[in-house]
Figure 1 (cartoon, each protein chain N blue to C red):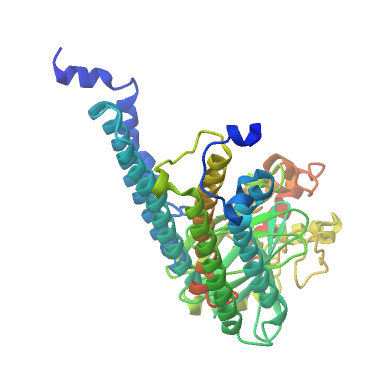
Figure 2 (cartoon, rainbow over the protein chains, first blue to last red; figure 1 turned 180 degrees about the vertical axis):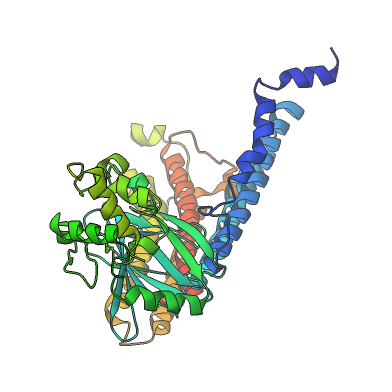
Length: 336
Length: 142
């Protein structure tokens, strides 16, 4: 048997498939929710930190295994007490102390930039089960309330005031920076400095109940002018229904009691239990990243929210006819 | 000369310190000195900065607190170094060449406690230095 065939035989079954799959696995490093995509300064710093740690870990892995190989195969005879003592002092005390000290200094020097004071909008985000209440605090003291979507101006450092209603959640947009826990009754603060316009994905990063995995949101980074225009539009009351069907939906929305939980500004619906729906049709997603915002998505959700998000507080409206649900969906989809 | 004296190994005339350390009951807790300083350093540093940032941030400059804590650190490091040096002398490895002191005689236990105290002092020294790095590198409450 030649050396070559032996080496080939030594490969466990499935290795070639793994090798073929590796480009696919690496492709997973791209995408809207990857920590390796640098949407801003914070994410870039964290990516650098990751690379430094990864390279260090690989060097250490090879170093340790090389030492192991040397000690067991190349030079298996007992070593002198003197060599062993020096190995303990250098490898066991000096090297870890210096390495850990250097990593600590490196990590600490990153922190001031990651925790810099915000110079952009102040956004209060409250974790609910399982969605995000989002309130923009404007300079004139007014508040613009929305939900399940965060828009940020590029090139400015936005401040997040994070709160929670009942359980601990964690606010995380991997492509924009680090995460921060949200505690009931205690406001935590973090800042993010996004730089590249685009749509990123955020995700609750602390288990918060049965639909924790469905608690996501879109984070859109916009040019500052576009952001201001969007915020002005978001502050406006809801648009009137544009079609007769949407008009019927608007009436049903009120008669079915949806307004007890949801706010649609400019209408009698002023509930604060569920997400503000004033401009829900203009959002990127429905139900905190669970569905899209097409008419059929609204219809699916209204008919049976629990099917899409187990444990959701909103009841199913499956007693309504398809036409009635379609009307409500048309109304909501038109709230842009 | 009674029987006990007859059995005992010949030893150098013990001075006060050695006599104390040959009694394990009294000397065991001494090896905890350096880690105790480390623990106090950790608690004092973190508590002082937390309380300052939460309550007194507006009253005085943070650098005052930083320099006070760094001065405290210097004193504590000096104390740990001194404790470590004393423990090293007790270990007496340079004269005996014995690292592990496996015999179990009174003098052996004495030297072993010196060895343990010396290592604990090293760990405590490193711990205090690590504790202090945030104080040096982070100058604000953020």
